[in-house]
Image (cartoon, rainbow, N blue to C red; front, side, top):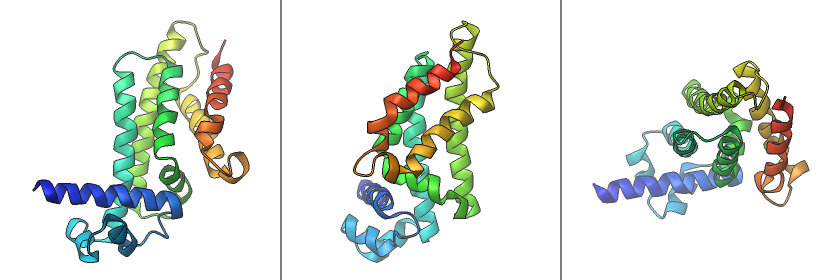
Length: 189
């Protein structure tokens, strides 16, 4: 049982890496098997279809991001700390997350549901932190959807246009602090 779970984790880890390098559409199950050093049939022993593997990759990334945010949100962190944590999580999965942003509109319905769940979880942490700071008069009170959509739109714009903003490296590493400062400036009273 432990070996089966270890193989599944290795398949997901390698799929995340490959998706980050070449995108969901270009990542083939045979490539995942080769990278994980297992037979091609082993992929299908764990994931009945390529779509199931893709959903597992999206779910894995989503859980990692939301788990980290949950750690911080549970400690009553301020908005800046939540934004920093969000970017740290995105940076760890930057390549694959960028592909999620780019490819989600063309993915199957189940995939889109996973994406919406991830964004909803991030929105809840971000908006809770913003509401707490707004109630203390530290930032303006704005509708939650504007707070979240402004933040995520800013981040996604930079990630989608990586070739313009950080062609040789991480968009988050290069521009993350500036994005946070800009966003916080927009919210300050």
